[in-house]
Image (cartoon, rainbow, N blue to C red; front, side):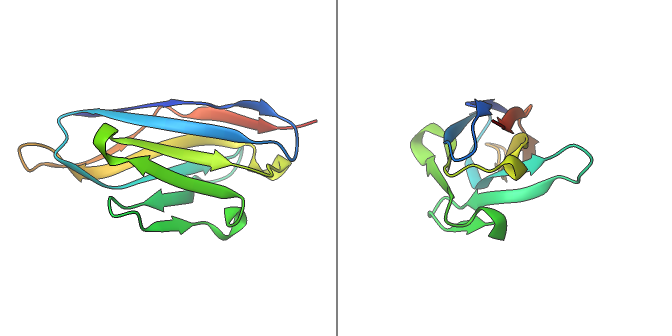
Length: 120
């Protein structure tokens, strides 16, 4: 079983920045990819960004140029640097990891979510 623990959410004014972190632990052989999703009230969960273990990134159009995803493969940790935040970025942000455990089992794990609120 793989656990994901997120941190870094909070309240920020429009134009501000936040950095989210997510650390994976458990029976992990490889994780590919890791990513962030978000869910705003009354809306479906949507992809924010993903990153492969080789460093290939993918972003939602709405965050391109403002958010940067990165990862530390040695620590099974993924980060999301969020700059120029807008009120429409307000949501619960969820970390996601997909990969294989030591026994070859495939896993898909989600974090508990961290609230990001952008408001003046």
